[in-house]
Length: 148
Image (cartoon, rainbow, N blue to C red; front, side, top):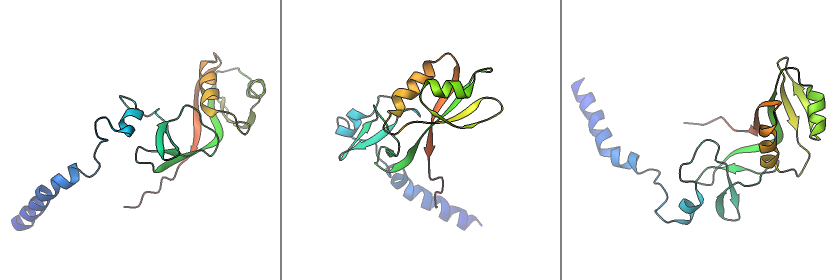
C-alpha cells in the first residue's frame, strides 16, 4: 500500500508544474489583457468582434457569449427573466416596454420576449432601474454537459 501511495505522490509532484501552467494568464500588456476588466466578475460578458475578444457593450439575440479563450459559453435567447413587485400587472408592464409576456409564475416571476434587433444589455439596465422590478437577468442557453 505504501508503494502505491508513494507512486501517486511522485506522479502528483512531477506533474504539478504542468497543472499550474496549463492555462496561463494573458501576458502583461497583451491586447487581450487590455480588453479585460481589471477584476473580471460574473457580470462581465465577453463577445467576439472579428478575431478579437471584447467586453460586450451591446448584445442581441443569438450573439454568442465567449470566455477569455474565445470558446462559446452561452447564447442569449432574446428573453429576459424579470421578477416584478407584488401587485404589478405583468401584462401591463410587458406592454409598456413593448415586450411579449411568455410566462408568469404565481409570485410575479416573468419571462419576457424582446423584439428582434433590440439591444438586450441596454434594455436590461433600463429594467433594473425600474421601481417595479425586483430583479432582472438575461435568459441564456448554455450547454451544461461537460465530458470528463
